[in-house]
Length: 359
Image (tube, rainbow, N blue to C red; front, side, top):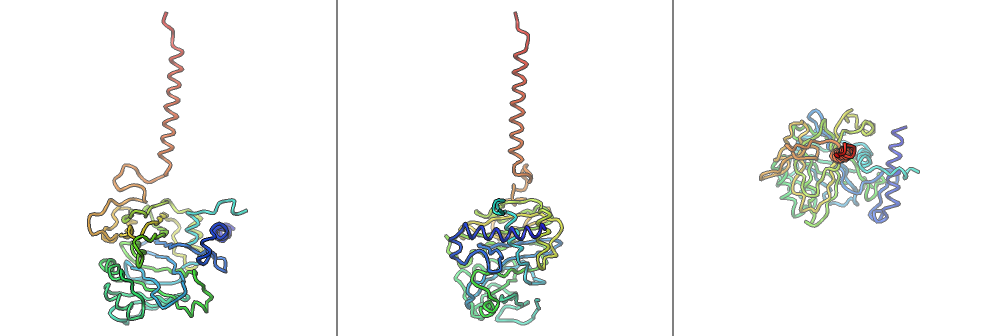
């Protein structure tokens, strides 16, 4: 029953957004014909447990032309790429943006090469053709051009930024004919899950600025699931931790019940990071240290000079006397101290008024 209510909340959230956000409908709407809630901005889940990162994101169908659909830098060699759960990302959004109560009134490896880059994995998820490449920036660019994809002017520098850290990239595009056969329309998304063993997890943020003018506003939500409060590095201006707390049992149960999501642990720490910044401000990636050592990699975050102090759970820099906890704890302590002082002052005044009067 609780799971059904959660799913009902997802659908209701979509209906509420349709009713209250008419301008968004002009861009394709937020609710698909089957009732699934569409995402109006990039949403990503990076879950890290036992040395394995599960990276879940969604690729949006946009007419399916011949242009290159999307590319994701990867921190290591993926062991699996598959369709993710149908509503995992939406359920995470609902966790941090709850609906007001009144609203309820098969991958296969390949050893071939294409161009100068090595193709190490190819698969198809719904109408999405996915290729995992290994190579340097120029090799990947060559592969892209050889396959008739568009290359933006900033692509070589962008791929070089990532190739210095990892030679692995995931390329994806929609097959327009297959999308039409599946009944997909503009705005429909296909969620995929990439499983990557890696000792140094990171989330690519700088890549979101690819082919954008400096003034363009990038909006995205990043969710982290880790064993404990993570230490983070790469929080550029406009990249802010909005929530960091133990994940609720209800949330984890809901996520685990989605398709292909049995890997979700029974206990985890949830961190929610909101990105709302001009493209010119997003110059780094989000490096994560989930071990508790408090040492995320400055290299993985993309820093070439001295990096700022990392933060734990997005609350305070490491070494600060303030530790993560209830965000209202300081206010409660201050209020208690004020009441205590007022009470003590009243008691002193009462004792003073009752003192024996000198003749």
